[in-house]
Image (tube, rainbow, N blue to C red):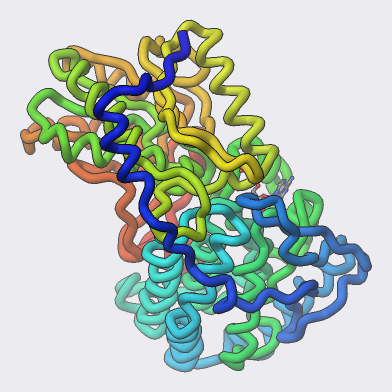
Length: 494
Ligand code: ADP
């Protein structure tokens, strides 16, 4: 049965927290052109397709710009330019020289950080605080980190010789547009590859801004090509015969299509797909910190995070206390205008995604789980979803099994370590997990038995360029970040 918070004294107190004076970031610091072309061979070029599509601000539903839609002929041009740049320039360039370009990109992202943050928020709906404090600095850090490796590959792989793979086709999703572009481009360039990158159709703008930086940084033409479009453009990249490697982050469904498409070819691949992370709270955990970690784990970026802690397992003796604390905390979250610096939860990235989330909220109720939503008001225009938690959830429920990719948390209880390990691993996914306990031995026990690529202990959603990230099972394969991220872009030869 659905429950929305009733008026009570607690709520009145929190309401005053919500009534903070607006603190909007200015749109003026960001320049968005009315139309964007394709970035091929160092220049912005009109698409052969002659087609453009609109990109909108999901917080207001207003059009921001028109984006070129690359067809197969455009993809061919981009791959050709990447191949020529690879053969004639990039693979021959001394690695220390390559590094200078990558450092330059990193510094230019920092210089234009405010503009990037504003555009990321306008185009994608995430709170400006997150774009400003997380997405943009972490993207710059990735370029800095991999710039450092460019001339040190012989130390990364001692006693081995490395060679780049060639042309990398990179396809990224809409949840962390600039950051995912950085995750893909930085290691590829450091290892001597050239790139054709396609951002997601809902969120192309920061990748195109990155193209402007790449142009200003004087990167040799064709080393990075950024082309826009939807699934068909992505498929044309995947199927192009002259691509040596596919790096994909996105849904498990598309990941499977890509895997089938490249089967029997020589293309290497890294696939970073969906997730349904278990966040596990033991009764000896510091509960207030754990609750903060759970809130961050599921509501960061509106839950549009493949490693979001979307399943919560709480040890039975503290179950009631944790759920009460979570409900109280839910009431304090500020949902609304992503450009306001006070906002905790911004807009859902698209109408299509909001429909998916609402479908799952209905399914959860039909399955018999008990729903609790924050009582906050949400803007009438734009795509918004109240932070939502479900209790009385069964392991077999779809809201506990399937990725929702929204601000929806499914909570279950457990009694023993073995029980929670079994429940946490009972998922088609295996991207991340979180463990909250005072006992080091419990942390070691769980981190060795949970089948997840990244496991956080007494924290959640911590990212660093030095640390590998990737999944097990239907969450994909290959690792990005750290030394592991280099191996995805090289061949080791004797
Ligand atoms: P989501 O379901 O989260 O939108 P998708 O997996 O559909 O994620 O999208 C991730 C990226 O994959 C986007 O850039 C999208 O355009 C691209 N894409 C979608 N379909 C295909 C496909 N068949 N082949 C290659 N790329 C695709």
